[in-house]
Length: 274
Image 1: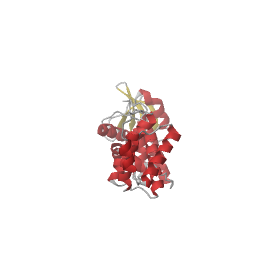
Image 2 (image 1 turned 90 degrees about the vertical axis):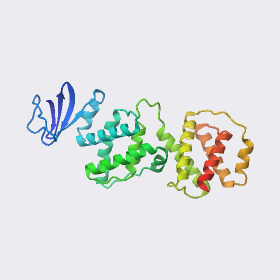
Image 3 (image 1 turned 45 degrees about the horizontal axis):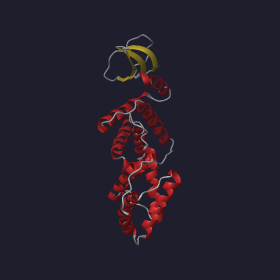
């Protein structure tokens, strides 16, 4: 391994069998200079630099410790293995930067609340679980205690960086689901129990419903008018909730609910609020 550049006493940029790498380890750069070899040592860690991320990586580690990159790499590899999906290479640098900033904020006594945490937990269970484990890795590696809000932020980074994904729309789905739940809470004048099984089922319905709304996907109308009217009969709060949702969707997206969608929303809302 031949040194290309000494970054600091504990980190060097090097070439190994024609592959550009970053080597990190105690004193690996001490009294070293360009062209010198780096002896193998069990304490040294090697990060293989990808061409497409090279410039951004070197710019990042000018102000972020390379340790954040190694931890981010561990999280990305863990996520890809457990989700069985490829993630964009850019996620590595995004996560490294995010971890660095999150730890700096906590050290300064600054906390940012994640307003979508409950929705992410209900809508994207796999990504939430991966991100919860990622938070444990971060806390143990850096001896910190980041808040659970970070689970949501990490999950959003994962959701927005699936490789070969066509406009994943995850944030907009979460936002719309949150708004619809909020409209229901206003009509019923009480909070939804976000830890309940019924809430999880409701949010899964909203996930696919919101995706249709955002894509303006049309579905065939079925003759279920009588069933719908009977279901809403005498339930004034349920009628108002569906009306408010219908009005919001049309005002915001010019999306018109068909009877089948109203019926499914009504059924899920009634189960949620009973």
